[in-house]
Image (cartoon, rainbow, N blue to C red):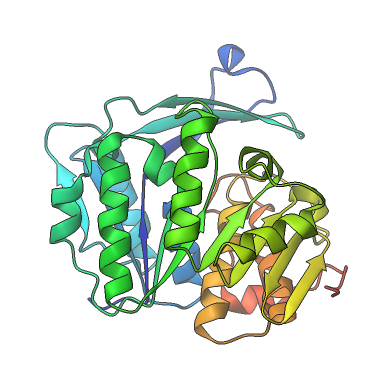
Length: 315
């Protein structure tokens, strides 16, 4: 199948605590699906763009559940490799209304074994945007090497490279992350998303607006700075635009940033203006927060267009 958007990374089975307590005190969970790059590709498909995922999963119940998630949302799974020896990764999470507590089980997961040889074999037919994250690179040395094989293949086909830094301190040091971030941004990336923590890792000085401008000076033409409940900043050759978060009743914030990123990709394919893109992305992120789980609240295009939420975008 030919796809406009391909996303590479680590999918996970998620277990959400039903009570707002510490994970060690919880006995009742409900299941969901996660992984930042998986969330992006599902969100892109729900927004109407042809999308495909690139990863390895275990031949187990969780792997089959992820396949059902992708296929039910129209995500192409041609490039999902079934690993007969390694399991699908998982995580546990609780949310107290303000912060999340995560506990991961990914050490021997199949996704971590995706290597350069796998990257050479997969199909990128029709690719216009190739998306990955810092997590895609941090989970193993093999995945880091594979990420650059995929990036170079996608660029050779004329695709834009989308990169969400998405730092996780449990996966790698800030020093190593910084080196990989700078190489990926300066040598390859066209679309970059980051936040305040990653601004510090990149040693960017000044305000968030100044940080966006500094990253744009490294080469990317589209740079987004996500500010959580405060909204976001988006810079392109049209200028720098700022928008506050839309008003919704928040059930859970996991996956909101991924819906935001997916919106940037979809709007880019449609040549949408910067102000309209930021408005659309903030709406999609807000709607994602209205349900528990990283994909349950991801909206369709119609739902985004029908939603207002106040707080207009300004330049």
